[in-house]
Structures are given as structure tokens and as C-alpha cells.
Length: 325
Image 1 (tube, rainbow, N blue to C red):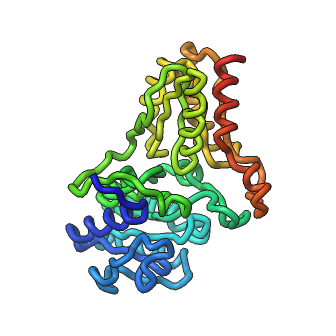
Image 2: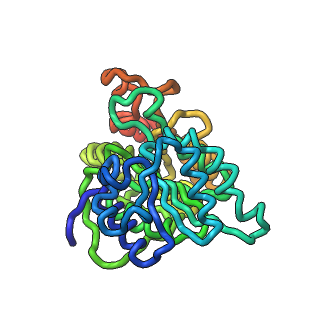
Image 3: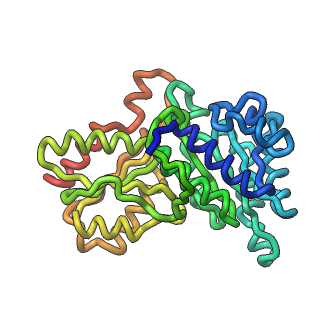
């Protein structure tokens, strides 16, 4: 199996789907002439032309609305945000239009659209460019939210998202675009709403998603040296949430640690905690541990940012806490 970068997996998914369906087009800032801000659409303008790979003005509210409206005339747009921090400018279109078209039209219209781009922190980008909004979008009925952690999952899930007849939020990371992984050359998709057990284990379940899951892998490697066996679940999809996979694992390990790169109040980890405590409380041998960022805006200072973000040491400490305290 060949090895490609995350950005190449994203580009392949979009290109393959666009070759198969002329109603699909890509629009966003710098997606065409510049080959994408992160080169995730490299070569697509040359192949598909300016009517299907469209550079937009810096107007997220405007081009989100144009794309959503186009779904009502039979199109299937992909909207790229240079960062999901900028989606806040157009969030009214996503929440009040894309997510509600099917219900408010009595099922006469659906909204097959993908909003994709980077989420969470990406180094020294400071407070307004380092935010994770997965839980914001997941809170909205009518939206599906996907956060892949590797090239293989990214391609398979993005293809499924593009084919979906409802709006999908597809969240990536600037710090993952250069990540390499094995991706088959043949056709494949990954179903939306199915988590993946990345590592089997018996002592504790660690649930995570997106780029921060790398810290769970580091922690599991270190804990293995102490004969502590960690089962790592990659959610892949935040909504719909694959609660059953989590519950099955917790019933086996009897302990749960949740790692998420988001503020601690009212996040995805909070929902998982509720689901597990309400459906598998009797299987828990220790309180659930939840690891998040500090409850402040992201700092610019690299020293402070390192302390603000969750890391493998936090995971190790939380695992030992549910095991020994």
C-alpha cells in the first residue's frame, strides 16, 4: 500500500468524487489559483476548471450562502474555510439554513454540502485562530461532524461526506496536512458514525479524535512499559456519536479516560461522560477522567501554549488515576 500525505488524501477524495459527479464543485479562499491555502486542492483547477474550483472573496457569510443555495438547484458543493475560526462569520448560514432546510421545507429539499477546513490550535496562531468548534456544530440537529486523525480515515470519510445528502462539517488540522499514512489506490469509503478501535487493550479505555489522539498513542507506548494495557478509540465522527463502541470497550476495561482538544465546559467529552455514566455506570471501577485544554483563550507564547494544550503526560497521569486511586 502506498504512503501519502493527509493533504493528498483530501485532494484525492475531492477529485475522485468530482470526476464521478459533475454537480460537485469546490469553493473557498485560495482553493484555485493558489492550489489551496494548505495545498489540499493542488492541481484541481487545472483538471476541473474555474467553474468547478472557485476562488472566493474574503466573505465567508457570502460564499457559504451561495453554496447552500446551490444545493436547492441540484448541486453538491464543498466549501473550504481557511480555518474554522473563520466559519464564525458565516455560522448563521450553516446553523439556520444548511442544518434546517430539510425540516423547514417539509422534506422537499435536502442540503448535500460539505464544509471543510482546519480546526483547533496549530502552533502560535493566538486566541482567535486556535479554537475547536466541533461541539458547537455537533450541538446542532441536522449537521454531521467528522474529525479524522490520519490520511486513510480522511479520504474514506470525506468521500462519504461528499456523497451524503445532508450537511457535513469536516474538520482537519494545519498540523496534520503533512502527516503521512498508508492509503489504498482503489475505491473505498468509511461509514459516517462508526468509531475505530486503533489499539486493543484491557486495562483502560482512552477515547479521543483528531490530531490530539497522537498524545494518547504516546502515552499508551509509555504505559505499556509498565504493563498497563490501553484500548484507544478514535471517534472519527463526533456526530452521530458511536456510543455503542465506547460502551462495549468500557464494559471490558471498566475505566475511561477522554482526551479532547477543546475547552472543558460543555464539550464532546462531557456528552460521552453522560452517555457512559447513564448506560454503563455499574461497569465503572473509577470515576471518568476528562482531559481538555485550559479554560482560557489560547495563548500566543509557545511556553504557555505547551501548558495550555493536553499532552501525553496528562494522559499518563489520568490513566494512573483511574487505575490506582
